[in-house]
Length: 238
Ligand SMILES: [Zn+2]
Image 1 (tube, helix red, strand yellow):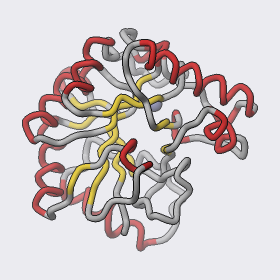
Image 2 (image 1 turned 90 degrees about the vertical axis):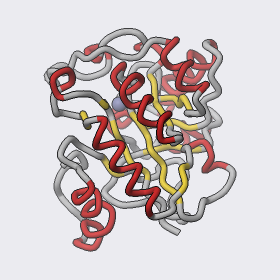
Image 3 (image 1 turned 30 degrees about the horizontal axis):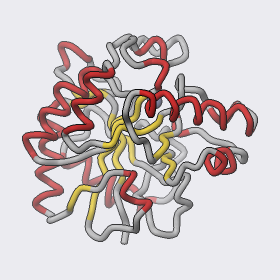
């Protein structure tokens, strides 16, 4: 059974968060209604270590932006949906400039530890996005394991129980799976343009990036039509 794992970033009004890596709260709500109408249930990435779900969808939010923890969490709460939210331990409470390479132009606020605790209490998973958003594809096995293990420790030091790791930029190399195994990670999330299947490597599960213009029609395209068009050379972010 295919499992769509959707990758969101920011959730906020355009006036505050712009369009890049952002979806409007109303768009997230429309997606949730879409899945509910199809009688799909919510799973968090950490739940996948227990078994492969039937008729489910997994909502994931990268980087733990402050807007996601306010506007996005409010939507999740009111719709009784759960999700996995990925934070970089060294970047919590800072701005996104601490996360990304220069040039993205994004400097939105990142969530505080208190905001993450709020989401945790609401049933969301707070997962590991490495300690400082390292590009694992550029690192040795030892350095990857260190970035993952430090991120895990920082979250645990603040009372969280991360069970899954989200790879920054979705990037990885041949040493990433061994590094994830060495740190005891059960689930790892990468990026692709298709839903996950039970045959996929659990430490490199594919996710579908969701962007500002992805209302329900484009969500349908990304979920059901695009995978049939064959491998794409375009960016995962398109
Ligand atoms: Zn990220």
